[in-house]
Length: 69
Image 1 (cartoon, rainbow, N blue to C red):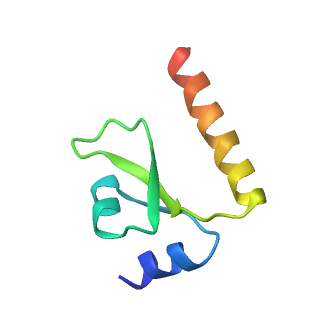
Image 2: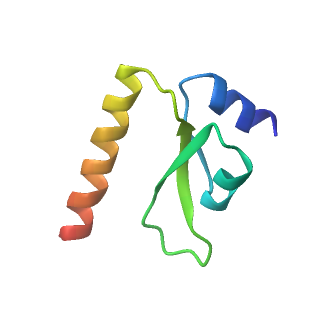
């Protein structure tokens, strides 16, 4: 639980089962394309800083380009 609180309060990423988002309304998830039975994602704060949002945009673009190739 401490890691989810830290993720919500600070600009950091937690790799976790993306279903945890429903338990933590201050977090959202960016799904990752791993070959696991359970869906995982990068959990991050909804109110992230501009710099952090830039990082997330780069990660999302990178993942989308890998899916196309």
